[in-house]
Amino acid sequence: MTAEMEKTMEHMEPGSQPYAIEMLHITKRFPGIIANDDITLQLRKGEIHALLGENGAGKSTLMSVLFGLYQAEEGSIKKDGKEVRIQNPNDANDLGIGMVHQHFKLVHCFTVLDNIILGVESTRNGLLEKKEARRRVAALSEKYGLKVDLDAMVEDITVGMQQRTEILKMLYRDNEILIFDEPTAVLTPAEIDDLMLIMKSLAKEGKSILFISHKLNEIMSVADRCTVLRRGKYIGTVDIKDTTREELSRMMVGRDVQLEVEKNESRPGKEILKVSNMSVASKMHKNNAVKNVSFTVRAGEIVCIAGIDGNGQRELVYGLSGLEPLAGGQIFLNGKDITHASIRERSVLGMSHIPEDRHKHGLVLDYSLEYNLILQGYFKQQFRSRMGFLKRPDIRAYANKLIEQYDVRSGQGAVSQVRSMSGGNQQKAIIAREIDKEPDLLIAVQPTRGLDVGAIEYIHKKLLAQRDAGRAVLLISLELEEVLSVSDRILVMYEGEIVGEFDPRKTNREELGLYMAGAKKQDPGRRSGTGINQEGGPSHES
Image (cartoon, rainbow, N blue to C red):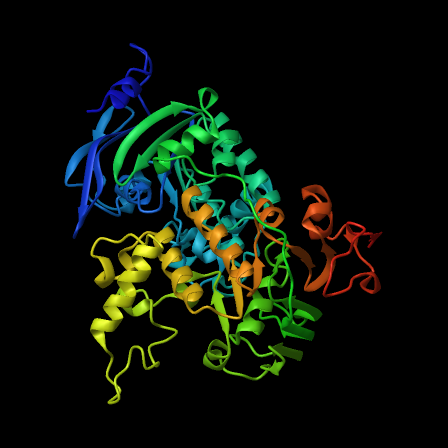
């Protein structure tokens, strides 16, 4: 046991009530890696306890042990001072432990309501009784501000709505121990603020919360204590009131991290992407999700699409990348009309796409890491012989180069099954593949979602390096801090339309928030579409 751990375990005063949860000396191994190496974590009743660490540090694995998804080879778990055995999630639920997973555990062909009540359904005469369940879920939704369409199919709702469904699923079961695994990764700033208030109110009600996050600002604002892991090992536990963001980042990464983005002045060049009167149909309703949108992105600039999740950003990207056909308008890449081009044709012509949903559109989870790294180029001579066979030694060498360059961590290196990797390292693999193509246009959709501060620092530098190398970058982000610090030009989307264009140096979170919420809208005639509204966003009330 480390000195830090001994110090942590001394925090509980003699005679005080037992911890809500104790995970003592937990060790969990996978092929080629020790995910958790003798970790002790103690959660007090009614506290919000943050769990911080790099991608692949073992945070989600530790929580999966607590929730019964994995069984530890060594160590024990106590609840309210009594040792318990948690062999599966049903055992965890019986003990009052609930978990919102980083990668949601939802049935896509079921409705939101069906997913929330799945496993704890009420029946009458052998038939499902949903009336009371609907009333209870509606009450929870109203109480905690988690608005969802209970009758919508999960496959048709946004990632943010899926997140809310997972939270309601846990609250519906009235769990006492609440595990939030990266709960804010897909939420807007306003939704994050609401969730922080919800967590605080839940803690006041006596619930104990374990909160996994990479976002230091969130941890500093909501957590009582924070435990830090690094490469599967326990580093220490600190009281939030006695620490700083810089100290937490040093504990997490093992070095000083540059928390502020530094960049040179952009030098926009020729037009790379031109979108003219683009419309994309909605799967949720009869109206178009993207309505007559026009904008450009030039070489040497980062243009960011900002907006609250569900305002057409996803459909906009689907239309640009070829995942969905357009209902109207045209798309030009380097002056060539690609409106009806296939996804591969767009890729070959110089478009790269870092998708929002890495599992659905970014990776083949049951393939090896090396095969995932060549998904966009396996047909090229670099990886294919004259007879059409894959050149495996060349693929392995290429994969190893990207793994080292982008610090993609996995238990068995290039041959690791991608499904077994942490979410953050899956994301880094996609980013490595898409940036290494050296595209003319890089479409990056929430590229830092689920990444730690060290990886975020690295990805931001990579995006800026793409810009400075004369490439065009279209960034779609829900993180206003990222929007303001990385972009050269900001376009705000609301209900499928571009409602404002801003210079990040002449605007702020509050002004952008008004446009994102639909409270303000610029006159289209006063937006250049290719330049900056130098007035910082003259507007009229909509």
